[in-house]
Length: 54
Figure 1 (spheres, rainbow, N blue to C red):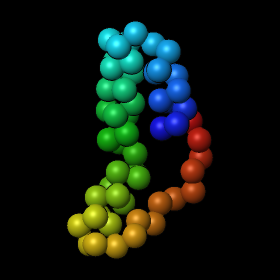
Figure 2: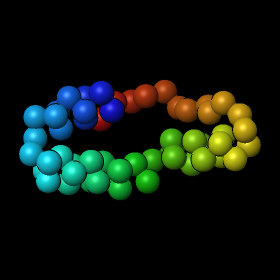
Figure 3: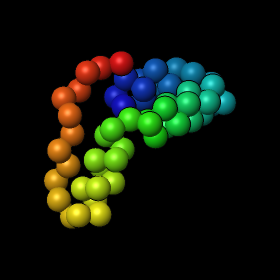
Figure 4: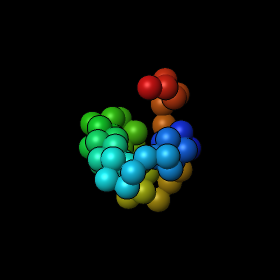
């Protein structure tokens, strides 16, 4: 997120919005989403897998 914010701060608004939307859609297929939602519903801390980078 920090890298995304820094990168998008230098982009025109429309381009930044396109990038943010693409990254959000990409995140829907990642295992972190399922774990985040499950932990929220179960009122517990999430147990995310180790971060592998992009």
